[in-house]
Amino acid sequence: MSKVLVIGAGGVGSVAVHKMAMNSDIFSEIVLASRTKSKCDAIAESVKQRTGVTVETHQIDADDVAATTALLNAVKPKLVVNLALPYQDLSIMDACLAAGVDYMDTANYEPKDVAKFEYRWQWDYQERFKEAGLMALLGSGFDPGVTSVFAMWLKKHKLKTIRTLDILDCNGGDHGQAFATNFNPEINIREVTAPARHWENGEFVETPAMGVKQSFDFEAVGPKNMYMMYHEELESLARFIPEMERARFWMTFGDEYIKHLTVLQNVGMTRIDPVTYNGVEIIPLQFLKAVLPEPASLGPTTKGKTNIGDIATGEALDGSGEKTFYIKNICDHEDAYEETGNQAVSYTTGVPAMIGAAMVLTGAWKGDGVFNMEQFDPDPFMDMLNKHGLPWTVEELPAPLPF
Image (tube, rainbow, N blue to C red):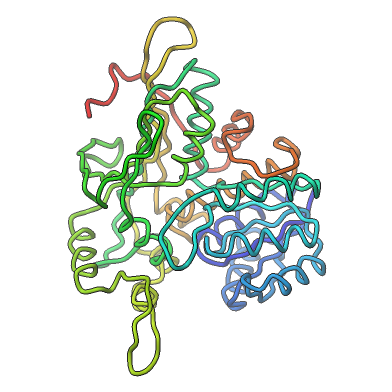
């Protein structure tokens, strides 16, 4: 049993802490910290009502390395689970090094002033964590996270090689809002409006944002338009599956979302550079975030399902030639809300965050240095997905994707 400190009190943090409390044999003590302590207290109250477990709460500015280090020294956790903003990854990693604590997150670092998602900054911490005898596990959400584990499970059990890989992320939920994002609006819109990139023949190929569209019929959701985007797991997958010829990431968006986003872009509301208004510098996207619905508030009204998975084509392990497999999870928004008080987009990230933390705390995954999900045995993680709310299925498809 181990003590864990979770930083971040949004929807993902709420799900992760609830699920940790439901696994007290692994998480003996849970501490939750955020810039806004009242959010931590609300989550702690919900956890107490649902599970009877007491969660200790603190206020912390995770940009402040000294203050975060002081909190770690006071709390003395075995692991820090970073569910704050991606901008804060490096400062929290610095605090972990200073305090001698293992680290985990769900999304890679990006600088505030440019929407550039790369593992380079965190991979550069490899020697420092290794020399300190500490472990850093990167990207233990769903995508990134589960999607990488899915790929490695296929490579372990079904495919000798993976020639092509497509990650398909479909949110078929309806929250009843004219325009809202299902996770942090600032991060969501930065991702969507950034140029798309996919891996092909040994390099990344860039295309305009939302410039490539395909239709796909998702089980339990139905036909949806999906758009090719860049997502950080493409970088780590290309590194750890070196034979891969092509890897793409697709995400579904409804016509209303696209319409609103297009207008917001056209009028400058998605800009991430500062503008002066009434003598005060503001960042339009951060102002937009302030007026949009809080993602954590969407749980009571969201209905429908998510469907996220990998389609991989390659040489079969059994020597039967080239085969294509589709491995996926389907999650119900209302079921997720009933269990944790959060909708499925938060649930599908918060549960893998709990499982990744469990992998580290139990020693199922261990090592000194900075690691991606692809570097570990997928089986214990996959087993926990089935047991803790994200069951998965795998099927053989008759042919590779036609596009």
